[in-house]
Amino acid sequence: MRDFVRGVALLGRGFATWRRRPGLMMLGLLPAAIVGALFLAGLIALSASLPGLTDAMTPFADGWPSLWATVFRIAVGTALLGAALVLVVVTFTAVTLLVGDPFYERIWRAVETDAGAAPPDARYGFWRSVADGLSLIGRGLGVALLAALIGLVPVVGGALSAVFGVTLTGWLVADELTSRAFTARGMARPARRQLMRRHRARVLGFGVATQLTFLVPLGAVATMPAAVAGAALLARSMLDPSPSQAAPRGSDNELGIRPA
Image 1 (tube, rainbow, N blue to C red):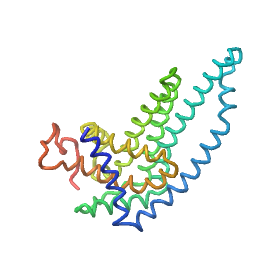
Image 2 (tube, rainbow, N blue to C red):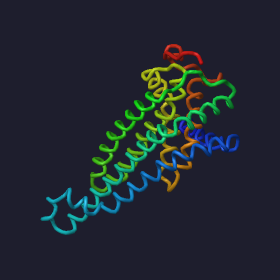
Image 3 (cartoon, rainbow, N blue to C red):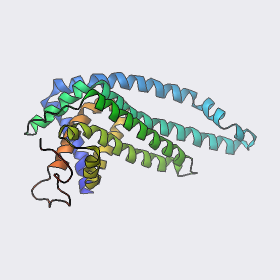
Image 4 (cartoon, one colour):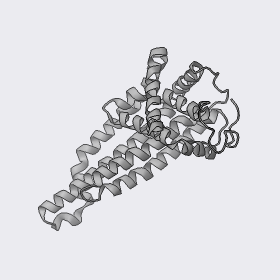
């Protein structure tokens, strides 16, 4: 639990970057605002068409007693909306990072410099950003589908779907946000995943906190620059454990990390 809280605190330190770099962080709001407006319009359109959509998807319930048909269709609509929210969070992160890549690269490099070390010279690259974004969207589709299916479970489906969606989406978001810092240090994807699994609670703390702020109205726009800054600190915390901590099994060199 302590490591989970530490992950949450790293998002808070990302927000603290506003005090040191207000102009740079302000630039990070622009791509988030543009993408957020488009996604919000899509969610509003989905919500407005949800009753008709659920009726069209469940014609077999027309012959059911009115109460049961209504309960079932509400469950289907809730599952669809929950899955859409999961997909929007993941897709929002991927698209916003792609659109605002020059701004967000400047943010995480500034955080690296402020932390006391020059940022690595290797650049993330546009096509690498596209590939990681598509991978994130693909995995997000899988999570959204599973969340929708879990949401169909009677009585507890909505709550289980929400917990499942928040947890797995938080992991995906943290994975994508830290990818730039790890890639710049020459870390391959398998090594990155291994390191994240070793610090699972911390990664989940950061990712879940970020994802929950995304669900607040306008929260995604306000949080995105801070999430990028916090992710740089999260990556550093996983790569540079404090001297008081015992080195976990498998050193950074064993993970294939090239020194910055």
